[in-house]
Amino acid sequence: MQDLLSFRDWNSTSMHSLLKLAVELKRSPEKFGRPLEGKSIVAIFEKPSLRTRVSFDIGINKLGGHMVYVDSQGSPLKDREDPIDVGANLACWADAIVARVYEHKTLVDLAAGANIPVINALCDLYHPCQALADYLAMFEKLGDVKGKTMAYIGDGNNVTHSLLIVGALLGCHQTVITPKGFEINPNIAKHAAKLAYENNVSLTIANDINELGQADILYTDTWLSMGDNTPLAEIKDKFAVYQVNEALMQRSGASHVMHCQPAHRDLEISGSLMDSDQSLLMLQAENRMHAQNAILAMLVGNVALD
Ligand code: CP
Ligand code: NVA
Image (cartoon, rainbow, N blue to C red):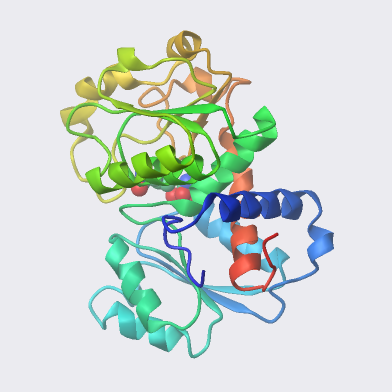
């Protein structure tokens, strides 16, 4: 478990232990001291970020460590040298690498070159730190994740993939409803189905919004992810019926709504629902730091999982 690229190779026991560590670190950080004392973490971002960048920086600081930020302008991952060599060089000075990249392969190559942990801060296929923060929010609001149902509605993307993987490992039933042509990655769908079977949870994947059954949480994300230059006008009509709004909440019986943000008011989610008491958006944002601190404490700070 040197790197955290996707949670794909994790099992249910470790996933529950990591969630427990995140809960404990959030509730009683003083019990853990400063597990990153004297450690330096390099954060390379090929894409923009508000939540991930700031929550990593502040979180690392709270754990006693120090973060060096490298932005897309100065990104060494562009053309200057191969990611495997970038990883090897960074490992000469740093204790871990946090990276937000276009292609998952870049993370694999960085990790191949670096004998220090590499943490995925979002790529085209996964957003594992987001998923851990989201299930932490679900645990806090609903008392448990096991046996609950999360329904993801909208574009099948990196966030969907990580929610499915982490959710199945935590025993959460899943529904995914996407417009035709915007389904999740078929290989990841296959893996999610396997995990769902092994962990005794249901997985429903559909295109028709009328297949949305009962759910505890409705989750949505942007219809156009970073790097997707499709004009909004081209897809807007197709996605309109997938908007998560008060009517959909009522139909599904969901008590809360989630969105990883950045959110687009009155596109994928109604602005009024974002601002309502049913919204967990700010709790999710808050939990980014606590979830990432658990990952950092485990991978870099030698804090053992139970
Ligand atoms: N949710 C999330 O990753 O937000 P940022 O893109 O602002 O980091
Ligand atoms: N799916 C979105 C998530 C942003 C946090 C994207 O990749 O842009």
